[in-house]
Amino acid sequence: MKKGKRYAEAAKLVDRMSTYDAEEAVSIIKKSASAKFDETIECHIRLGVDGRHADQQVRGAVVLPHGTGKTVRVLVFAKGAKLDEAQAAGADFVGGEELIPKIQNDGWLDFDVVVATPDMMGVVGRLGRVLGPKGLMPNPKAGTVTMDVTKAVADIKAGKIEYRLDKSNIIHVPIGKASFSEEQLADNFQTLMDAVIKAKPSAAKGQYLRSVTLASTMGPGVKLNVTKLM
View 1 (cartoon, rainbow, N blue to C red):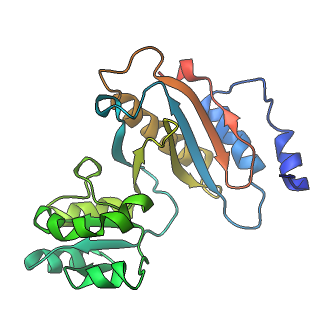
View 2 (cartoon, rainbow, N blue to C red):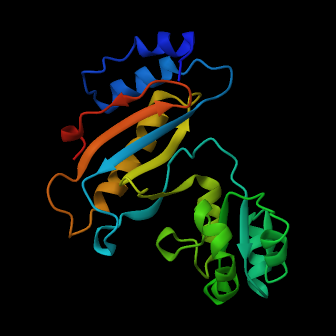
């Protein structure tokens, strides 16, 4: 795929043979994000684990101190008083069984995160084929299966992100927007790294952090010095 002129200019800021400190990487990424829209800054972390084994899975959630810069639409599956609680907490959509056909048959997916109370997981489980492949299935490890819907919704709205391995054992997550200050991006990045390092499975052998790269939506990747991150 041919890259545009803007990408070529941004790529000049990055020495492909070098690795950078976090602060330096953030500075380069901000300079290279020159698109007409507010680019998302993403972090890609390759881990020395084998996610095919349950005891080497790395998955969790963390609240970024400065949020992601994105408005997140939250759907809560609950019943009774918990429905009112979710609505009061600021959930965008709340409901129960009646939402199943809307999602299953009508293809309604106008939400970014799904939260469910444990007593609703039997109902939500029927949506596994739809929500699972999109990474939207509620999960206790991510704090999205809980009776405390107020906290769950508040955390998500405040900038809680979920991290998990893909098939290549890489975690891909947003850590903010190009309009954020360098300090805000560095704070968010450090908070994410602390969580991922803390989540290291005891079964993981050898080097845990294989590579860490920061990139903006349209810009080149900047590799970080992993030895300084551990």
